[in-house]
Length: 338
Image 1: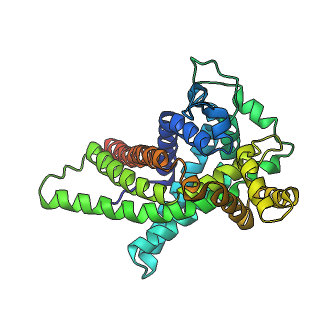
Image 2: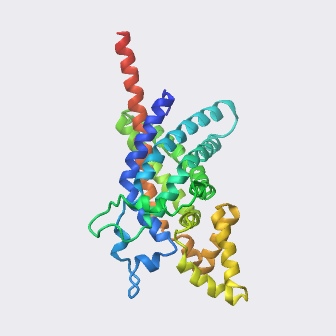
Image 3: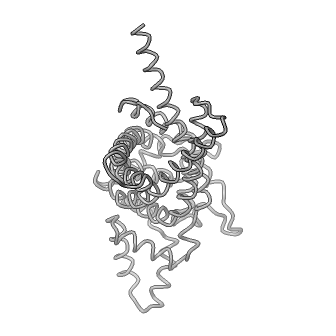
């Protein structure tokens, strides 16, 4: 399905979709972050039963302000880059469409992550602020300011760029080819059966189903990368989560190997703080050593559910918005000509 949209249309459609989805699914993202945090057992479960306690569900909108401010421009940048790259690669290269879609989404993700990383770091640190929101409230406007005060330098806010891009690149590289292919198949099927209407509602529903299905599969597969990314971003601030639960278990394992725990943990901390490939591998190895495969896929089911809902709404609203803006511009043009 093709649209005749301007960059302004794409920017507004992407921004509106981002705002809508962020507000609706943000609580699930907060819970996912807390499930993946190194202090989950200590802070969010009952010591006697091991079940989640009420604090897991408090302040579910902590940090949303910074995300909305950054997600709007980052989403616009993503879709402008994606649509432009997709059109260029599809028309001027012999690449198969799935490859073109994968490369276009990858380029768009690199641009988007550059804008989004500071907000993502602030968001995840704000989501972990404890003891601020009353038990009967899910909003806490002070959490973001508390998180900001943990950072001594603005450059610390970009400490998660490599980790964020490292998670999002394989995710989008899998999601968008599956999404585009599934959407094309559904539209082709409806046209063959004479049930296609071409309406904005049909566009939104088909897109939402295709994006949600593709997103949930890609999300579950990339959960280990997301867990590592969460750990790195929570350690970006000097006063952030230090990973006490993981450190205690790691110390025992390191001592069993006859090594100095302080030296080895300091190496891991420095690598993770850099947020690069070595840092990600170090954090991943520590999680594997202390929790095994289960630790790397912690929060995977919730991530799959959240992504299915979020991707479906996000791309569904985006495509519907593009269709609406295109039709309105055409109608206005016809009215002027008439």
